[in-house]
Image (cartoon, rainbow, N blue to C red; front, top):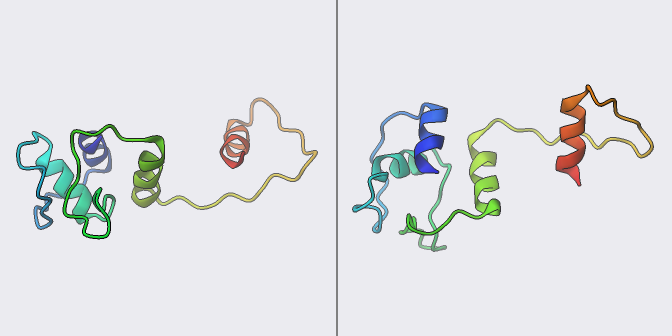
Length: 99
């Protein structure tokens, strides 16, 4: 997860943030870049001294990473009764996200 986000977002090298549990990870640099960009905050609040690189990422955690990483805006709700055309994939996706 750290590697594809770091590469996909083209984050700069920044190893100023230190988690105490990522030194043995091949993704240590990627993890530190995500932290420096504010995309990850750690897995043990409130201290957030650990990243927990060996734990699976939940859907909720991935949603939080993407929300912090991407310039997302909250879409306006689609009024009840409005029929969406199948070719309008953006509107179809927006309706799915809002449910």
